[in-house]
Length: 190
Image 1 (cartoon, helix red, strand yellow):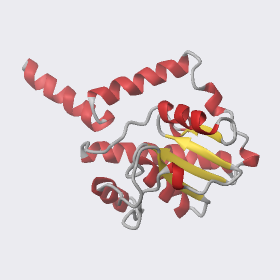
Image 2: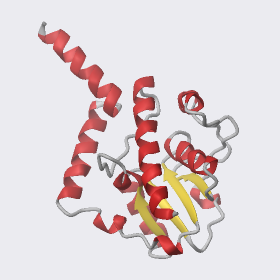
Image 3: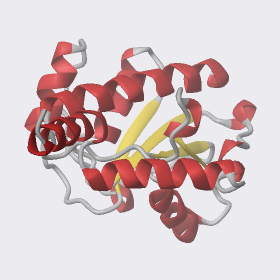
Image 4: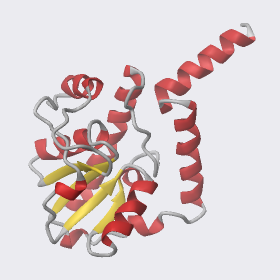
């Protein structure tokens, strides 16, 4: 196999499994930071006090939309919102298609900026990336609990790369990882 062919295969593998080369680097960087002691505070959750799960990502059109709809489909009180979004935008078409194949309908989903979400006293924020969790801590301090969804998945991954604009294979891999993480998180919550 030529160098060009090997590079193309490697690049395809990275795109399908991590969304991009940047996604690969971010995923492994944050896994290393966790192994070195970072993010441990986000695993400490008082599950007995949690009444609603609030999934948070940047735009609320892919990851948090899917996670929130998945949890709601299981009869658990949840919400989703974005840290940097406009109100009323539909879910991403790629996310909608992959979610539909998994039995989750995102066609009615509309984005909610975090500033417009009516927060409840015992909400637990569940962020997709460490930077988002840090932003939530800046905004709300200790008023609400906060965790990272990927700290409950296997393999553990504090950073779940945004699938927006990525390959269909990465959407599927990302949503599969979200499902694994949600399943484990719900076992703690219930």
